Image (tube, rainbow, N blue to C red; front, side, top):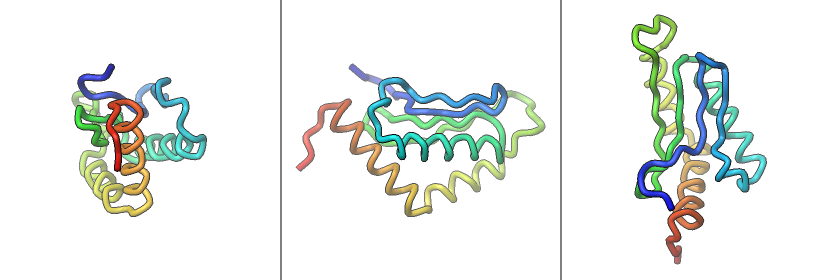
Length: 112
């Protein structure tokens, strides 16, 4: 079903939009709310586009892009915010649970 990376969700500061992949509508509402808050606050603070994806191994990745020559995009702030998320225990727990969910329900892995 899924071969390459799969987008979970993302936010775009240029279009002021948030996207959640419809394949993940079955996630609990509080998880969907946490993802939306995380993405929207990120792009509000630093600009650009944040996309949360699963790679082919089921690992969660944060991808950041910005339009060429965008003077409003804070590249240093972006890197700091990503590091902050990677070291936040609650966000790490969320990311780990989402990765497990994806590996079981989308990749069909059996967890012991």
